[in-house]
Length: 124
Image: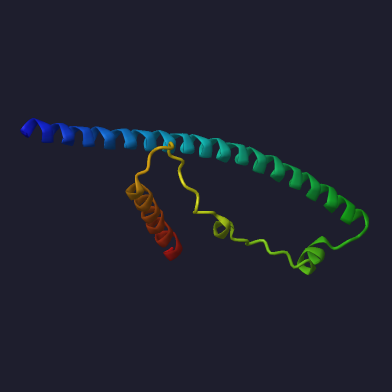
């Protein structure tokens, strides 16, 4: 009987390790994808900033040519420069786990972990 219960415990540990390995691989893929997205977005932002700078120079030159008070036009435009982009973040994204991994406990722990992270972000 001692060997039977030990074999069950070892099998349980092996199953848990396999599930953790699958989740770790899914998380690694998600991190790599996020890194690529951030790098791509950074490149796009740099090109957009350069394009906006060029457009500003052109518009200022046109404004000077037409004797337009650029600062007064900007003040009259009522432009909201301080937009908070953190509020648009979608925290509901989940890490994909291979099918056939019907472990309900892991899904609940991931949700509670993300909820804890949300609370700390909103309190700051």
